[in-house]
Length: 52
Ligand SMILES: [Zn+2]
Image (cartoon, rainbow, N blue to C red; front, side):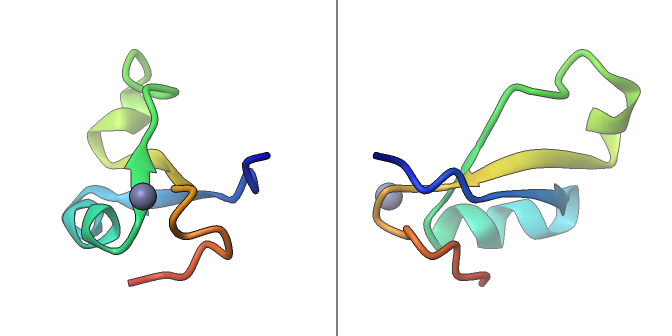
């Protein structure tokens, strides 16, 4: 079962999160907030949601 660790990540930090075991979610793609930050979920390989 997935841990369900989510974090709201500002765009300039998103690439580092992706490299550290986080996945982008489409949650806010249609929302104006998506211009500034995206909701990311910790991958199964990063169950504790360790930040980059
Ligand atoms: Zn992974």
